Image (cartoon, rainbow over all chains, first blue to last red; front, side, top):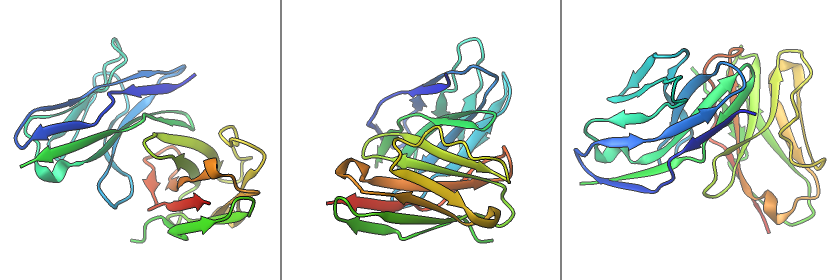
Length: 110
Length: 112
């Protein structure tokens, strides 16, 4: 079946630190890959996505590259800010089957 | 434009009661999803509607859960004879076919 495994949190970083949140997937087909973010008190919103191998999704300084050979879609940011504190969800979609990871809570301290 | 809305935002009920949760998708979105987010857990897929096709109910955890979508727009998720383990945030999302999903704010259900 289709599934997503992402790095468990919580993750606590200082401002301007480098962020990596690992995400790997298992899919029976050829998935599209997503990162969603949930800021405190808000609903989930799409952060970035990639629809084919070697595509790089990027938004708000975050990046993730679709790696078919390692079935991974790791989220990275070079310099985090306090405002990046949120829960991050990796997800995949194969046709109408959408699967989410368990979420990783990120706290950035000033 | 208006996003996905859900009501109520919070619902507290007693064990054994039935509850109805409502989702108003973005106008024109043909696909609608329901998910459950339990404390500290990821999103659990419940059910998916696409246009006039038969819904994908494969994620519903028991026959106490049902959902319908009237007129291809508003959807209602019904939980009968609620149990304490049903306590969670229920999220609705809509999309244009297989495009990006847009999430509502969720309904927090607490079963006492």
